[in-house]
Amino acid sequence: MAIDFGTKGTSFAILYPNKREVGDMVALAREVQTYSTDEAATTTNKAPTAVLLDPLDGNRLLAFGRAAMLRYYDMVAAEPPPLAVLYTEFKMVLKPGVSGDPASLQVVGACTRCRPGDPLPEGPRGRPLFWGVTVPAIWDARGKAHMRQAAVAAGLVPSVDAPNLLLAPEPECALLAAIADAAPAVRERFDGKRVMVLDCGGGTVDITFNVVVSLRPLVLREVAPPQGGPWGASEVDHQMRGFLTKLLGEEAMAKVDAPTWMDLMDSWEEQKMKVRTDDPVAGEDVDAVTLRMRDIMAAAELDNDAMTARVQAFNRPAPADCGMVVFAARTKVLKLHSMVVVRSFFGSVTRKITACLRDTLALHPMDYVLLVGGFGNSPVLLREVQGVLCEMQGDRRFEGRPARYIDVMRPEHPGTAVVTGAALYPLQPTAETPCAGSGR
Image 1 (cartoon, rainbow, N blue to C red):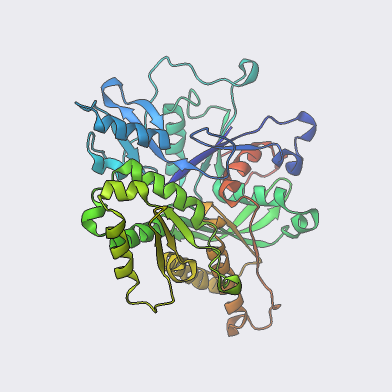
Image 2 (image 1 turned 30 degrees about the horizontal axis):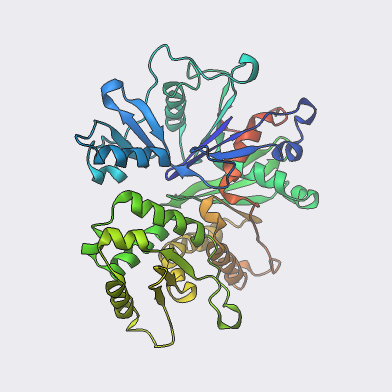
C-alpha cells in the first residue's frame, strides 16, 4: 500500500505482488492499481488533501478528500451547525483552523490522531500491510521523522520504527515508475545518466538533480540541492477564478456557494489539461473550454440578459471577429477561446517554472528531464519545458554538445507516477549500499 500525500491532492496505490515477479519492475508496474482517496474508481487524478474532524471526539476523522469538503458545507448549512473543523493544504505548514465558518475552506490545520485501542489495518489473511509513504526530496531528517510520527498517529503502524513502514523519496519513486514504463531500449539509457525530475503538482513544483548510479536496484546520487517553489496547477485555477470574477463582477461571485463552485471547477480541472499550444485546425478552436453556467448564474442571480451583457462588455476591447468569450443563452454554456483566453491562464506560472529551468540547467547540465505530477499532464507545460531546452541548445555555454543534449520524458500517467513508484519501491532487489536518505 503506497500513499502519495500532496499539498493539494492525495492518492494511494495497491499492489499484490506475485512472488515470481518480485524484482521484475516492469511486470510489477502493470499490476499497480492507483486510486484517488475518494475511492471512486481507478484513476489518474488525486482527491483534494482535506480532512473533516470532530474536535468534540478527540479530533475523530469524519471524512477525507472531496467528501470532507461536501460534508462540511452540508454541516455549515444546518441549523444549528454542528461543531466540525475542515482542514486543507496542511502538509507544509501546520496552524490552527477555524470551525463553523465558510471561510475555512482554505484553512491550514493539524493532522488527526486515532484513538488508543483502535485496531490497526490488516492485509489479506490477517497479515499486516506494508506501507510506503512518499516524502519530498527537500525534507530533512526532522521532516521524515515527523512523517513517521504522523503514520503512527493515523493508525497505519504501531510505532515509528515499525518494519512495515518505508519512507519513499518522491523523485526516486517517479523515476522508478518511468523506468518501468519505458521501452527496454530506453530503459537502459538511464544507467549512469544525469536526470532532472520535474515534479509539478497542484501546489508546488519540486526539482531534483541526480545521477543514476544503478538501475537494479534503483540508486541515485544527488548532484545538486533540490529546488522549486509554489508554482503548481492551482495558480492556473486562481487565474480562472480571476477571469470569472472580472466577467461576472465581485458582487455576483460573492453569492456563489462553495459546492456550486466546486462543481464548476471539477469540469475545469478535466478540460484545462487538454488545452494544447498548437494553432487550431482550419481556424476552428477545437480546444475551447466550455463551462456550464446554469448553477453559477442561479447562485449569482443572473438571467440570460445580464449574462449576455457581461460577455459583450468583456469582449468589447477585442476585435469583433475574435470571439474571446461566447455565451449560448439557450443552454447557458460559456465558451472560452483556448488560444486567446485559456492559454493566458497558464502564463504566470509557466514563466516561473521555465525561468527556474534556465537558471538551474545552466549550472547543472542534465541528460534527461523527467516531467511528472498532475500538472505534468498539461500539453502547455510540456511545450514550455521543451521550448526552454530548444532555446538553450543555441546558448554559447553549451557549444560542443550534441544538438539534442537533453531529452524530455513523460510517463503515460504523470499524475500517478510517484504513487505507482512508491508501490514498487519496497520490492526492488536488495542493494548492497542503500541510497543515502532513502528512509529504508
